[in-house]
Structures are given as structure tokens and as C-alpha cells.
Amino acid sequence: MAGDVEILRRKNDNSCRDIKDVVNILMSRGFTMEYLYDHGDYYLFSVNKPDYDDDGRWYLDDASSWAVIYVYITEDKLPDCTVEDASGQKTDYYRYIYIEGYGDRAFMYLNFLHEYFKLFPKDIFSGAADYLYTKEDIDRIYEKEIWTENWYGLDPKTL
Image (cartoon, rainbow, N blue to C red; front, side, top):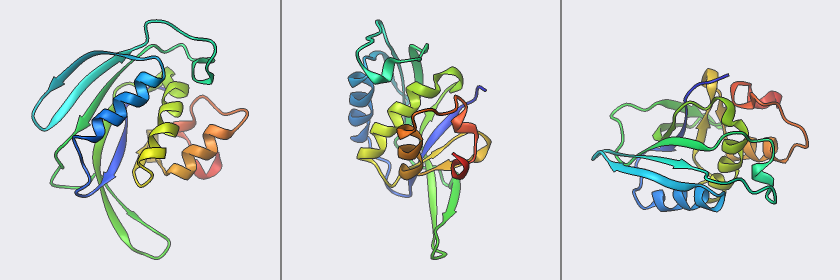
């Protein structure tokens, strides 16, 4: 299952300074920066993994070695989605990070999201089929002994 996915952020929370944290997470996983372009309202960067290290959990069963990521530093005028919590309060979310071609990178991104949500627990992950995942959903999936490769296309409540 291939497709693009994104991380959504609350209104007025887009921040250029958070890009450093995103890059640091990827670099801590063995990725290096291939290129970075400033397009004014967003940054486009690519990372790759020149070597694999079998000592770390994040490398196991992961054949992927690169990613193209867009980080938006200005908000869209219209939200990507509105989420209603249990109390009925509605919150607008906007695209912050867009990841091209998720596909066979399921394990790599699950690991990235697990670390990302430690720093930004209020953001949400928008997977395939418009399913939304919170920090708690990602942590629950990450901690499973066995998980399905297409987890990002399934209802998080069933995982």
C-alpha cells in the first residue's frame, strides 16, 4: 500500500524552529540530509540512509533508505481537518509535515512518529484512508510485538 501521508498541527502552531527537531530525529536514526530547499512557505528536504546498522531496533525489517519530506511554515487558509473531542470541542488542524510515498517505509515512519510525538504530542498523524492517529495511537502500535505492515491504512481503534 503506497501513498502520501502527513502530520497535522493545530492552528497558529506552525514553527520554523521545529524543523531542527524533525531533522535531529531522522539523523538519530542514521539518516543524512541529501538536500534542503527553501520555497518561502515551506521547506522541502530529502534524507537518505547510507548504511544500515543492525544494532538498533529501528533498522530491523526495514528495506527503506530515503524519504522526501515537506515542512510547511505558513498555514493554509482552510484547515485540512477539524477534530471533535469527547467534550464536543472542535479543533482545526493544518498540514505541517507532508511525506511522499509512504508505501514500504511503514516501519521507518512508525519509529519516526514515535519519537516525533514525544516532542509534539498535540499533533496528529493523517494516514491513508483519512484515518487520524494521536500520540497514544502511535505509541500503542509501536509497542506491539507484532504489527501489520499497512497499519497506517487501518482504523487506529482496531490496532
